[in-house]
Image (cartoon, rainbow, N blue to C red; front, side):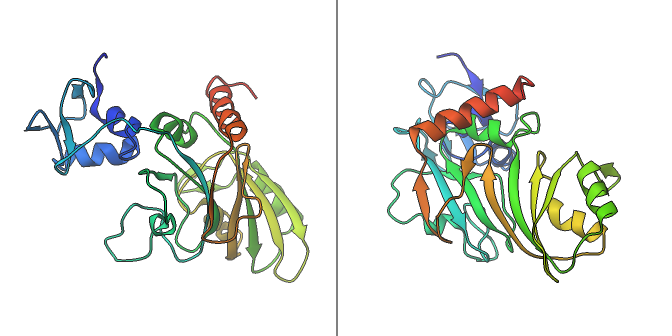
Length: 246
């Protein structure tokens, strides 16, 4: 096999996302044939070289696994948490394969989270170039005015940069209404900050869709394996988006 960048190898082996893999390399946690490697441009061959992370020899995953999880409020979307909080990994009882979360949902949010050991697909889903749409149900502590709704759709300034056009639809009218929000970007706490821009606080936030994958009837804390049809649709969606096809 030809040599690849170490972060790509770690990602494809299901060890971590590329970004997290880069951090591991910089922290000196990766060795190739016994030598510590800390340069991000370093390359290796997984079949020929002995690559270890924290002293553990890595191998390509025997079986690619694709999961949909209903992340409950009060869990973090990381493999481990230095503060000792519950992580989504603790919900995967009985799963033999090692997987990792694709993207994040913040501690106070719930809903659809994908997990996999397919590094290439994970990177495609998270890539800013993919613009894979994500749909959320959001409960606000008050309604937006029609002009505010339109500004929300057109884009609002956050940290000196305007958000991309978004979808917004009122789904339940009340003192504390529910909205459906559709985003094609994923800045940290973006929806909460967009509502805060209009003086509103988000009381509840639930992600219900990522590209062609829907949360469905999964209860908080439950997970399921994606069907072959769902996996194929997700791969097609990321490829089409990357090529700029609607």
